[in-house]
Image 1 (tube, rainbow, N blue to C red):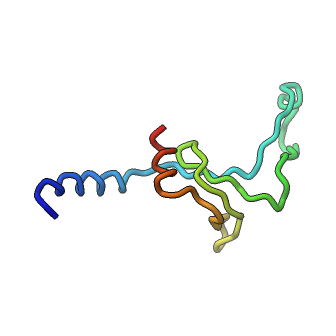
Image 2 (image 1 turned 90 degrees about the vertical axis):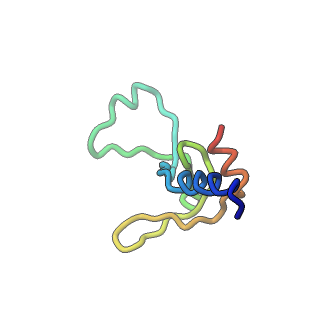
Image 3 (image 1 turned 60 degrees about the vertical axis):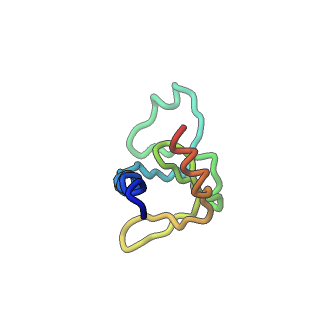
Length: 95
């Protein structure tokens, strides 16, 4: 690695250590405000997604992949089934 490349390599290492928010969406629905205001403990919200549909995975609010829910020890986890290419993920995070 040349001397000119050293600062760039350090910058990339710093970026790779930055935390990003990872979220998985179970499903979504649309409901009238009046119904939303009636929600309380024990209410059930029916989602539009089917049980066999993949869950959507988001990084900093942008979809980058999908997968299926699994249990690891006593926690939910996501088994990734599809993910955008590295270039597409970088593009998604930069917009």
